Length: 351
Image (cartoon, rainbow, N blue to C red; front, top):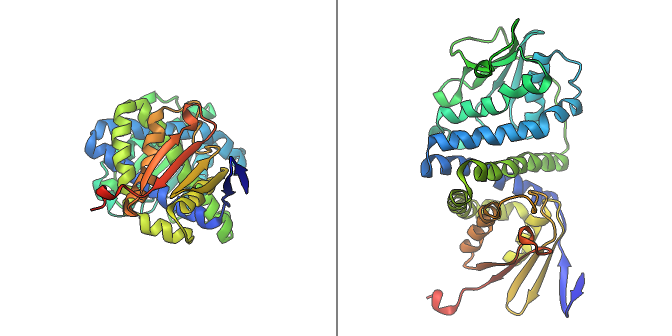
């Protein structure tokens, strides 16, 4: 507990319950952002955002991920297929590996598709699924220095086909950029999926891994939106989607946290659940929350629209509890921390 100007600030613990809550919340936020861009901006802009999101994720994670998963000695096609199985299993996403040869190796992303959650899959255009493949799968060969390596998609859930299915293949010639991802509906895998031992986590560690998996999508998609749509459109879309998701999943997230008390202490647990230092205080009739770091984004480099879209989640929570959420300090604008004040609306607004 810290005392500043006679105000006692209490540190909030980082808990597994908050990890689970964040994993749920950011999963839904991701799907909501995809639908929000499609319906409010258009399919082509959404396609560009998805491409940029997955390309940026690829550049951040692919090469180091191959090393962490012990796949660097595998043939390139096999290593890539196994990578998608093992890395996605960490986030609770079911992907199968179907071996064929050292130069041709299949993957099958089984429904339900994690990224296109629930009935949202019915509103996701196939262009977004294709953009995902071009953003990540089509760049594996480039990252590995293998110009002959590409990916062929043979089935897509967004077309009503039985899962996203395809194979990495090393051709006998260099591929043109447009051929790094190709689409050949109807080709079928050579046989059943092979057993591929994935990491076994205890429930606490699994909650943290799934939190990180969902966090990483928000870490990449909001900046990708500013790159492709511009700050104003990003702010407009993400703010509406954030409030909607905050309201829609308020009960589920609060139940997952399992903490009693005011909204401030519960938000504090969510913020601390990122691995950041967070403190709360009661000052007069209002709750104050301070966040001293921002692991989710680099506050010195992201556009302010990123914070505005992210903050809309907490605005959605506040609206469900008839509270006003005000931001008085912003780390991304040079302040030493973020600070929120949570108060009751003025009486005339409550009638």
